[in-house]
Amino acid sequence: MSTNLSKQKREDFLQKITQIKSFVENHSTDDETRKLLRYIGELEKDLYGKKFGLVFEEHKETIDDILEKNTPVLKEDTELLIKNQGNMNFLLEGDNLAALELLTKTHREKIDLIYIDPPYNTGNKDFVYDDTFVDLEDGFRHSKWLSFMERRLKLASKLLTAKGILAISIGYQEVHNLVLLCEELFLNRQVVCITVQTSGGKPSGGFDYLHEYVVFVTPHDFKPNRMTFVGGVTRSPFEGLTLSTFDKTQRPNQTYPIFIDKKTHHIVGTGPSLADRVKDGTYTGELSDFVFDYDEAPEGTVAVFPVSSRRADCVWRLIATRLMSDWEKGYIKVSENRVKNHPNKFSIQYLPSGVIKKVEDGTLEVKGSEKDAPTLVFGENTTVGSEIPTIWTEKAFYTTKGTSALKKIFDTKKFPYPKPIDLISEIIRATTDSDSIVLDFFAGSGTTGHAVMKLNQEEGENRKFILCTNNQNKICRDVTYERIKRVIELDNYEESLKYFKVDFIPIENRFYYEYADDLLCHVRELVELENAIDFSETEEITIVLTDEELEEFVQNTKDNPVCKTVYLGHDVLLSGEQQELFKKHSIQVNVIPDYYYNELRG
Image (cartoon, rainbow, N blue to C red; front, side):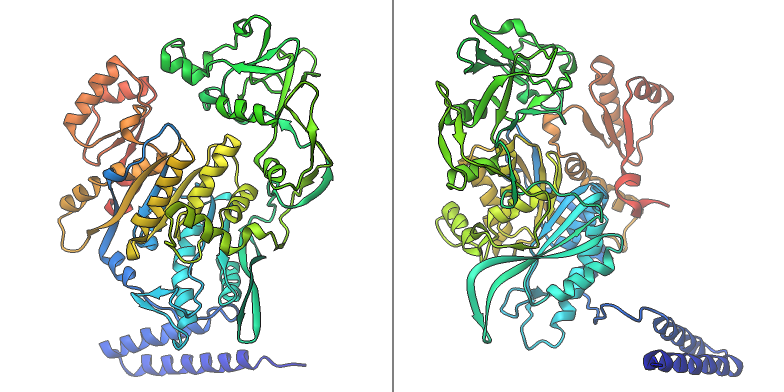
């Protein structure tokens, strides 16, 4: 029978500690003795602690000292605002530990996917710890990396939804430590390591390294979406154009009639979208009350509106301009509707971006076009798989692809080893829904934001992103932000972006009211971040910080009650009459310090 020597030694040590404590307690009661007893108690606690798992020397960062004496806040750089019609996204400049502290206030259990590409700790000037590069000679290099990652992953765990996914790119240097760390931090989730071929080979120490890893942390009942590079079942590449998870109130720009020629069954055009009708004043009612009018079809055509197979109003997956462009390319198919008693006489299908990619790279054979129609006819098409393979060998995932893509945007090499956009796109595609929130707090060159926007445009979807990175060597301003700005302009993405900088409010030696007032000056940014809005563009959410602003708001609400949520300053009190007004118009009130700053309670 084997003996656990470590356990035996530990029990002997604990017995000796008990004897020492008893002796000291019976022979002295001065302050020094009490300090000694407290210290012995801490030793005893450590001995009763974890006996198996990842053990490492904990290190303290400069940012830890800053956060102990200061509260992080956000300040917008309004000159860098990118304003378009689409989603509002965010770029946070600053230490990501402070940024994560702020996100626990605004996005606790709200993030659907966290993807990060942290330092690999190669010892080759890729990991900076407290302003110093960690090299191969540093005896604590693994401990420093683990301390660095543990703090951030603990905060990240608070941000994920119940079904949220964490995906981490990593090299061989720390993959083993990372898997153990994730298994300890995410006890109720599965941790799976994926191998990704990232190059044709990198010789080192007699070995030729061809791969890196992506560590996935997912729920045990995780069911991924289909990816574009796996599969095997033969089926038609066309899919239904209707998107039943949204309605006309949520996507008015994807609510429009498609006109089909009665004789040829060709798409001859589209009518104005609901968003267009509201904009030009031809429709002034509530979005939910808009009725599909089949009589507006031009002579000789039939109108087809976004209606699901269950006859419920929904939206199209593509905006009108993309639909017409894809029709001309042969990516749209029109056929007679076989659903009985359906208001649409025709059914319309489209090619998803993954299939289009297979067409364009020659993977899917094009045999020609339908008779008298541009719709393409294909050879055998196999489905993409429903599960994520644990080995990825696509050449599109090679690191050189990320480098060349970034060079096309900047005409020069601006960032070392950027991730390929196809790699990040596949991770996002497999793990998110059409309206998910994606966070990357090691944003680097901004590939994650680029991938989100690209997928949104290709699929007519609505994901939003939050990127965080420091501004070492002006990376955040000159690379991350500049890349997002340029690709929005180059590819006509309808996305918007706010640029926030992490700042700090000192805590010590302050009067309460001074501290509270300073914090309230930065609440606007947190409200915009949480709700993905720009206050200048919406009247449904507002902030009231003074009694004067409250009076003005109440007066405006009496005349035009459009606001749904008010964030109220900590010292602004509602009168009985004002409370009744808020109740009458179903206006939700959030008291700001209680909502964002627990530090002010009590």
